[in-house]
Length: 339
Image (cartoon, rainbow, N blue to C red):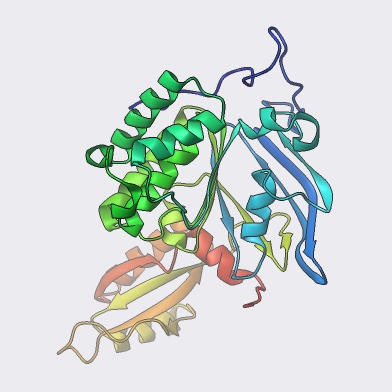
């Protein structure tokens, strides 16, 4: 099923009226969603202190941070479900305060736990949300059936929601977030409870949505999976987004050798600092001289040169790979709190 693109004018706008759009800093297309200096406290506890971000149309952005860093509170504000104490949010140039329903129609929201009306069928769940977005009944039903096909729940179209497993409810939650063809999609731990095949399907669906022009923001702790689908990342810590979070200047690589002594001796001769890999025990049982090490290198060309030179020196390298993806290495390089 092809996900229909968002309308150029929000439903309910007078004919010919196009919402104002914010100009992008670089002079290109304006962001689909722009948030500046958001703050939200619950009594004395400040959940979000200072968060800013911009989502470009047709992009997938990761929202990364430790537990308690304010990710879900930030997402609720971006979805228009929680009013910030300070700061501004614009969706395609509109604010929730000024444009209310029209701004919310541009945003799809999928929480980490999908609550359902268990007595309703899957189709009824989706058409009910379609009605909430003022979709005509026939349009809502057509989209509901198409989305159930997309998330591989077509066989449950007439089944009550209470028969679904947790993973199936997550997939229904994705369909619910898409029922009104939003231009911005906010996902909070969307892969929670999904089996491996469904996780792959999710990544493909997210990328296809971005290809159709949707701006997607994904919050997840599974950084390896995020690495495979995102174009950009926003890091948040202690309730504040980290301004400028480039990948670490030195990326870590994992080297596995059949002869640890040969590798360490060669590394010493070329002044290459090696460290034992704290995450892996020596590999290949029965080969006590085998071992796994980590090394920090500035880029992939240096990694290729290291592998070439080690092999030429007769060091039996059996495997070389990044010790974590871009997001993981950047996250681990940050000073983060566990809350």
